[in-house]
Length: 154
Image (cartoon, rainbow, N blue to C red; front, side, top):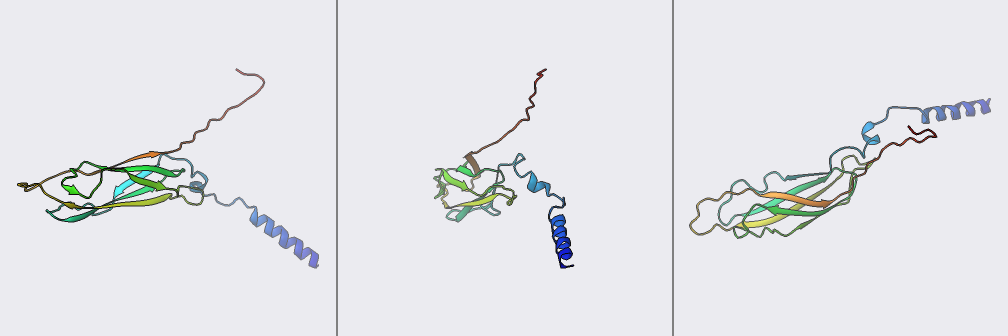
């Protein structure tokens, strides 16, 4: 009797563990898609209105939504560095090793922050500019194709 109970328990475990179950298609297809990098300025940076002498921050959020590590540079452009003192036009390093995987479908994240001060030119009342963030990065894309072989090529 004890032997039959053990056989039934083992058979039940095998049936439950080998069941088909529902597959999460997101995890099954984590390497597909058209996303790689997403960038946005952190809300409130830079402020929309600044006055002479104000100190301010610029913060750029970078998300790696692709299936490869993200390495490159971020450039802040569109401003006069004699007015926006302290903000650099030199490349700022991007390095997001975290990427999408079967277990991490969100990818990785990096925040790049710069601080500066407004120095208005003599005699200027107002000044308007559009600050841009430009990313230059190395990336890997994989593609495949199905090929059928046989004895009779047509």
